[in-house]
Image (cartoon, rainbow, N blue to C red; front, side, top):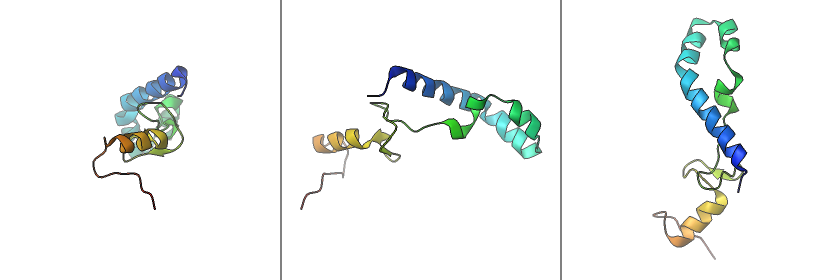
Length: 89
């Protein structure tokens, strides 16, 4: 389980990215790089980190499901994800 502060910080970055996304696209299209640099650092999309929606874990993240590998395995074993099952041979 990730620290609460990590989750909250990531949410703040996500909100800031959404707030400045339109302005950032306009400035890029114009080629006004000085104004782009004046924008807050956390409004950049590269500062976002994918995190599990349940645990906040950043490593072992599956984009297709939006969860970490540990949560994905538990959900698959419980049958919560259609068409996905743990393989064994």
